[in-house]
Image 1 (cartoon, rainbow, N blue to C red):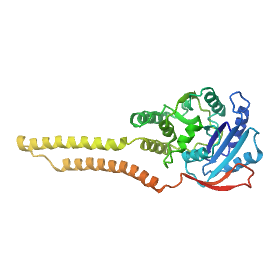
Image 2 (image 1 turned 60 degrees about the vertical axis):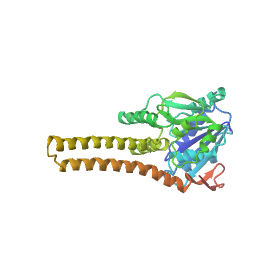
Image 3 (image 1 turned 90 degrees about the vertical axis):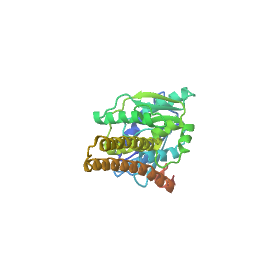
Image 4 (image 1 turned 90 degrees about the horizontal axis):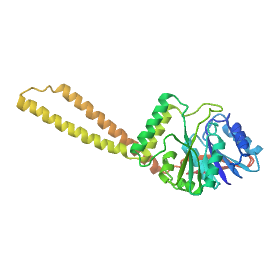
Amino acid sequence: MDLSLIIPCHNEAGNIHPFAKRVLECMGEADAPQTLELIFVDDGSSDGTFAKVLQLIEGGLSPRISVEGIELSRNFGKEAAMLAGLEHAQGSMVGFIDADLQQDPAISFQMFAYLAAHPQTDCVAAVQEERREGRVLKWFKHRFYKAFNAVGDVELPANASDFRVFRRNVAEALLSMPEYFRFSKGLFAWVGFNTHTIPYTPAERHAGDTSWSFRKLMGYALGGIVSFTTWPLRLILYLGLLTSLISVIYLIVVLFEYLIVGINVPGYPTLVCLILLFFGIVMLALGIFGEYLGRIYIEGKRRPVYIARRTVNQPSDDLRPEERS
């Protein structure tokens, strides 16, 4: 295969056939690959998404297009679905794209053509020109990239997305990292390689609603920071040094007032304030330590990142259970 497109799906039943139709339209363009592999990864959908994928496989799309469906045993998250597709991809170039048609397959083909014309480039990533989101969410995402690049061990392009196409050597580098907590944007930055960015504007969703809530996005962002930097641990160290210095200064002031000036220092309010201050710092430190320790504990179990209930790339009577780690 010239190009493998990995499509993570969670409750995207209304988008599967329109997405395939759009791919067929784009296959007639000059940038399109000669052979294409579509890998739909159903991440524990409850709306019949995989049944729609089976219809595509049984009906066929084109002699130039191979369709494969991977049904995970439950919802493991988008990162796990992306890894599942990556492990099954056969193309000399590989790409990620969403099923909701916010990301046009034609842009994937343009990225593929760019790589074919520029052998020195290993990856082409699409960067959003304008986010169609609320001001609050847009502000938080902007601050996330600023904070990540300020404290992280790698640098993320602003407004970078998982929408990209890359060569087989990049795919192999990503597969060589078996970590459980995956943050693809950071992994792409960590493995390096020559990356070219192109701007794009996402379209409206064709059908359905996004499964990304504000809470999930915040958790994903926190996980990305923890996965690629120990800065929160250093922050605790600096905070401890600062509070220790302030405590010593305050102790000197109290002793001066009591011994030299002769002022009786009230003890109860001061004691309560100091206890609350240090108790808050200790709880913050325990929370940060717990986040890192919990990740070490889960990583140490060596559980698979996902479990596939079945993988289908032929008529539906040819099913096989699989497990991938």
